[in-house]
Length: 173
Image: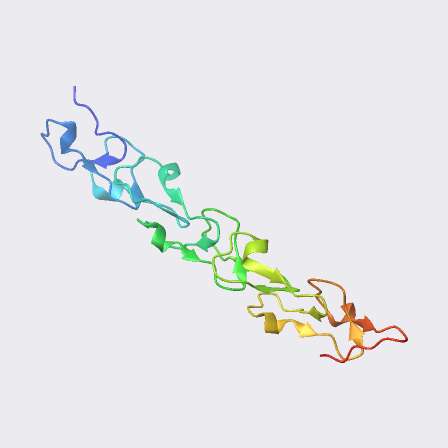
C-alpha cells in the first residue's frame, strides 16, 4: 500500500517513491492533514502568530506574537511582523491580533511596546490629572489650578483637586 505524506507536507505528483518527495508546507503556514496533494492545502498561521519553521502540522505550532505587540497579518513567517504597541497603548496578551489597550484616563504612554499597563503607561503625578484615555505625553496631565492641590496619583478629573486649607497656598499651575 502507499503511505500518505505526513502532516506539514504535501505532494502533488503521482508515482513518487519516497517521503523525501513530500514538500514541506512553507514558513508562515501549517499542514494539519496527512496526504495533502497541493500547496493550497497548507493553511496560513492565524493573525497574531507567525512561523519561521517550514513543515509544521498545527496552528498550535505557530508561535504567538509576544506581549506588547500585535499583528493582523495571516501567514506571517517572522516575529518582525509583530508590531510594537504604539505609545499610549499596551497589551499583556500573547498572540494579539487586535488593537492594543489604551492607557486609561489618569495615565499616559511611557513608550511603545508595553507588555503591561505598568510598563506601557505611567500614572499622572500628584497635583495633576487627565480625563483622556490613550494620552501619549506627560504634558497631557493637567495641573491643578492655583490655590488647589491633589495628593492623588493617576487622578482622572479636575474634581481630584481641592482648595488649599486656610493658612496655605499653591501658586503653580
